[in-house]
Image 1 (cartoon, rainbow, N blue to C red):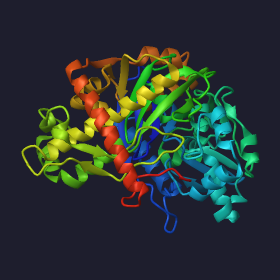
Image 2 (image 1 turned 30 degrees about the horizontal axis):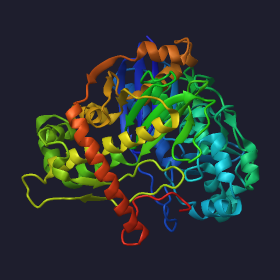
Image 3 (image 1 turned 90 degrees about the vertical axis):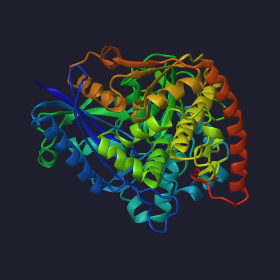
Image 4 (image 1 turned 120 degrees about the vertical axis):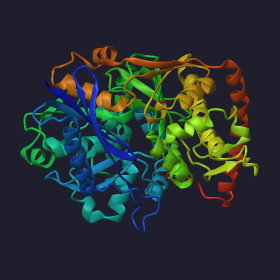
Length: 520
C-alpha cells in the first residue's frame, strides 16, 4: 500500500505527517524549533537552514519509523510552511541567507521606501494585497545595504516550504499562495511581478518558476534519500502557504467560505474571487489561494498559540506535572479547570495581539489588565480562559473587518489547528462570533492540505478542489449561545477601548511594543 507525506514547517515547530490515500492520518513526528535574533540586529528572526534541515530529516525518519514504513511506501510528498519567511540562494542552489516569517529587521529600509517612493506601497498593495511590513523587498534591500558581499551572490529566492522541496528534489520553485506573500506578485495573474523589484533597485532576475499547487517538481534525490530514508522514486510535489493549504484541508475551496486556523498565529480567512481588488485602506491582507481563480481576505492574530505556550511553560508547572500523572495533555487539564469560569473571566483583559491594521500595524506591550488579588477568581484557570476568550475576540473583530470589505455574510466558521482540539476554546469561538463552528476530524488541516497536494501530483486525486470535498470529514459542531454572544459583544467593545490606551503607552515610550512592523 502506498502513502502520502506532508511536511509542515510552522513558526514554532516542524512536523512530518503520513496519510493514507483516503486522508487518514497514519503517523506524525514533530520537533519544536526556534528562530533567534541575530546579535546586533534588532528585531531580526533568522532561519538556521543547516540546523533546521537536520530537524526536517529527523522528523521524516521518525514518522516513517512510527508508521512502520519504508521510504518506498511513500508515493509522493509535498510541503507547507509559515509564509513570508524567505531563503536566498547562490547560482549553484546553495543557501546564502534566510529569515523566518516575522523578521522585522528592515525597519530603515521600509522607512526609506515609504519616504523615497511616494505611493509605491499603495501601488504594490493594489496588485499583490501585501504591504512592505513583512514583504521580501525591504529584507532583500537590508541584505544589500548590510551584507553586499552576500547580496551580490544571490541568484534565486524561495519561501521556506519551497526550500524543503528544493533540498529534497534539487529544484527551486514556488507557488502563488506562498510566493504571493513576498508582495512581488499579482493576485489576478498569479505570478511574479519582477518590475516591482527593479523599481526599488533590487535584482529582478532571481524569481523562480511559479507553479500551481500539485505540480510535480521531480523525485527525491539520492543525497536527500540518504539523509531522510525516503525513496528516490518518491515524487516531490509543489505545495503552498500554510493558511491556504490549510484551507484545502478544511474544505474551504469555494467562494465565500470562511475558516479560522488556530496555530502559533491565528488566521481568519474568507475566500474571494482573484479579480476582487484589495481594499483601499490597506487594513486587510489579501493572498492568492491554492485554488486557481481564488484569493483570500485574511486577518491575522499574532502569537495566540505561542502566548498560550508561554503561559503554560511560565505559570503552569503544577498542571504539567498533574497532566503527566493523569496521562493527558496540559491544555486539556487547563480547559477542565477553566470550564466553570464565567463569560469574561471575572473581567480579566489580556493585552497581546491587536486586531488587523495591515497598513500600519503594531502591538501594545504584553500584559493582563483588571487582575484581582482574590485567588478564588484570579488564578491560572481564569487567566487561561481569558487568553482563550481574547484570541476569539480578536478573531471576531478581524472577521467583521473582512465582512466590511467583501460584503460576505458570515454564519458558519470552520475551525482547525491545535486550538480546535479544545472543546472549551471551540465553544468560546462560537459564542464570541455568534457563528456555527465546525471542527474537522483531521484538525491538522495544513498537513492534510499538503497531503492533498502530494496526491494530486501523484495522480491519486483528480483535483485539489474535489479531493478537499471528498476527504474532509466533520467531527464536531458547536452552536453559539446567543446570550453569551451578547455579553461578548460588550466585552469586545471594552477590550478595544482598553487596547487603544495600551497603544498610547507604547506611543509615549512608557511600555515596549510586543511587535512592531518595520518602518513605523
